[in-house]
Image (tube, rainbow, N blue to C red; front, side):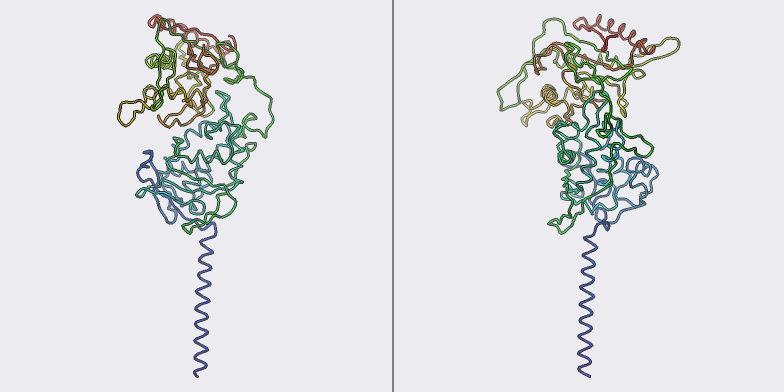
Length: 487
């Protein structure tokens, strides 16, 4: 009897241990297998104390139902891969935040639907995927706000996304779009460099730090979590996306196409050959703007502790730039009527593929045509020394016109219409690359050819009358108008 009891007890202990070990192994296996993830962020919680931008809340738990009809329409339009999901890791506030986050990239990548789709997917997965915890870990918080995350993606996804976007150009300027997003010249960019800049909190766009890791292996974190890299399917630029066509030949290296001839970008010397893109049926209308009279040059001191300075010509005086911005704004709002037909610049200008703004190249585009931006400055702690102002920003834009974030002033050099404005397109009379020595400003409007468009012809004739009247009231300014190609 005792032997039977001991045997029974031994069997029970063995079974208990077997059940415990099996349950533990299975439990560990479930945690370590991708596909069983949950949310690590949900909703919006205050601002990041580092940059003042709104950030999501930390949240560890299952995805939640997205029932708001407007939010679901946004999800379907911007993140179609998740449109079938009833439960997501994003609410309506996060989707509005996502739209704002993607506004600039969406504008400049719009000419290529596949690139736009793949690029959006980087952030759609980050914000809305119901399996966030599979590939994202929160690594920094402030109260309940997310300030830093780690985000793993596969080499296949990173390469596919990058390859679909690397040849996209902005039709308004002919510049490579990737250079704006990468923080490097297009020929020096790479998938890892692109992702690094997208996650850099200093880029002016990212609300919190995103440390991207491009890897094809699971990654065990010190916290005990295991990340499995996100591997969403990418669409090559040579393929259509839904009811949208494939990327144009010039935006996709996989599709052969004939070369286009650019319009010379320097109307002063006609020597540049890589400037504003020649678009059939359109011409560049240049306004050469000269400041008459004797005006002192501007001595600009570099921020302390430097004792050096640099001289700018008088066309860079802030009050004069305000005056020229006012001129540009008035030209943009001109409307002329003939035979009950009204024509504005917006009716005849070249718009970027997804932008609502006309293609206008001018020095004011380095400030997104904003007087407030021209007036920005940063003082030292004592409030005595100017650490950065509009002239420092211009120097940065002279060197790297594709800069999307100039840290001291929290400004971009990228134009309001989303294109990169090269210095040689908007200045005259400089030597070498010393654009601060320019003696004339150039304002260029890309419009329909007046010889082919009656509306454009009427608007241009009205513009000539307006500029003459404006010069009569502003006698210290001389404006010369001409076309490229010659009209």
